[in-house]
Length: 150
Image 1: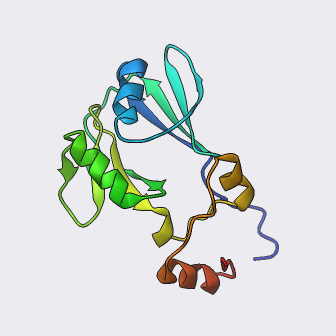
Image 2: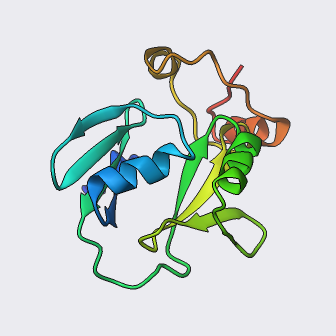
């Protein structure tokens, strides 16, 4: 609607996860993922994701997540599976590559090549990455929305 004055949701700036000790959480996630810190305090840490970030906040109080989760995009889903297995992390049964961290946060690993999510070339460059490819299915979905990638 042209006269609709509601704001349009554009995406995510960050996701915040409650964890135990910040240093312990950084070490745990560092066993699986290569990352750079954007910043850190005694009660918070910010894992850089280019133009987004993952915030780790000290103080998990609720039980483990069941269906509630978020999809973390990685450049190599196969490497993520290997890292999870090498770290002895139990996967959540089902069709996706899901796991829970020691504090009960559920995370689904999603391959960049297989989804519509796209990082702008300047953001990839700033992250020290070369252009990441999309598979045919993702390209088709993007093209259908007028967001074709080369």
